[in-house]
Length: 265
Image (cartoon, rainbow, N blue to C red; front, side, top):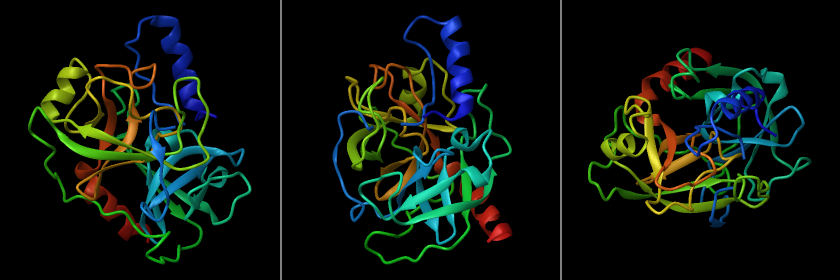
């Protein structure tokens, strides 16, 4: 199921555009990923929507806060959401589920400006217990951490339970896929100026066929052991060449993250 605002946007875009060049963030498998496990990525979570089913991805940043995309929370209430953590296989009735107490959506989030500031924090009703094996916080980059500045880019990894292709199905087993993390210049060039290095970072492969799809929204892009991106949007169909997936650039929001945790924590 998509967040309700994505359904409206999809209808608007489809009426206006019939070409491949449409940017739609959707909540859903990593395309051409491989099975992974929570022991390898103990910070990954499944954000569950009003129906109790997988809605978006996300990551644990502290005992009481989870980070996801703003388009996953926009138009929803905290009581409609819950978080499943510490599992490789997700299910509607699965264990380790905690309710969301408060949504802290970025005040500058703008879906009409290429999803600028696409980041939200979720304050949990109960703090998590870290065990260092299946439940642990993700490492965040330093403020304004530099992205790869070579044309070759660098190897990163995307983790999630999203669709295996446009029109595919949500995956019950956690998936991972290795991706190129693009320089700011190449990210902007490949998207013909529709990304902004203040907000965005790109991850994909030059030939297409690997990367994010619906249901991966809000999930983490990892580079050098740190979360550098939050799945935001992509050209459809999923993983179409030569357009890499677009992520919210986490390094630009470190002060915002810290400030909100201090105020509400």
